[in-house]
Length: 412
Ligand SMILES: Cc1ncc(COP(=O)(O)O)c(C=O)c1O
Image (cartoon, rainbow, N blue to C red; front, side):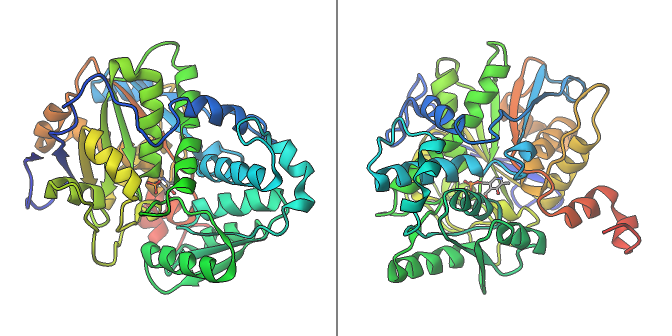
């Protein structure tokens, strides 16, 4: 069902409850992902120079203000100095592909085994389309292995994100169109030019690489679980673009807390919400979001869901939510201005939307029915992922400083 609010103006969050989700208990495995994915992914990631688990902020002050029991936010601004979680997927997938290319055992290969053989990897060119974060991660990994990388970005991508890709020695190609257009173009150029397409979304016939990327993302849950001292979350809210992150998180949650199955909500921007639209349409086939997909949440501005992600989340996620851009702005401000002794989390537009949504749902009386259907209350223990830092520093400052900065008076 869609909770309240459909068509009401000014309501920042809408939710659709997935009636199919609890048809089978306990929590299901996701057929396509290795059930031990997070163990394999963590052991590979630990071999990458500079690897450290990112912080898990235990926001007791904010939890108490919101009337819930616990709130943890995983801070991905500190991932390998790259300001976003995306490295976890790109490095894992490239690592496995490079191992196969070299005739090494992908299940036991370490990053140093690959860098040692870099001269034999030069013939691989990695290509991808991205809003910025995934492309930077592909470019970083390719550079470490001595391979060329080509990164396609949709028109309107923030200059800082394009520069970040170029700073990793990749070729950056700006495409006139949306993220989905960039994916189609890079896929066709990769076929013509013999590049290895390292795309973080799946479609029929292109599934192995996105599966590896999703497995790579499970490290986020393994790291979080290792800091939570045996306490499990009752709620997980996760932001989605194409849905690979959400599926990787779901698989990690299943692996670590499947027995106590937390309530799982997929969160999208109102203007780019293929999961919400598909779930609301009620069929088994995914629906695309149309239009210009305009949102400040650049990492989530996707019109087409990964087919693998839809087949998993459409069946098992408990709820699909959509948020106005102001919800992400609220999350950025809240995380940047901690309560009491809480840690400060610098969180960008796509990173902060789930915190913003939790804040709205717990504080806005008009969202009482959303709070109820999600079962949020004094006993709730909520786990969120701030998936990026200030990857667009100019917009970050504009959002947190507001009108003063809009007048052009702030530092650049
Ligand atoms: C910061 C950030 N968060 C979340 C996502 C969503 O990941 P996915 O596209 O796998 O759903 C992205 C994707 O680029 C992102 O950059």
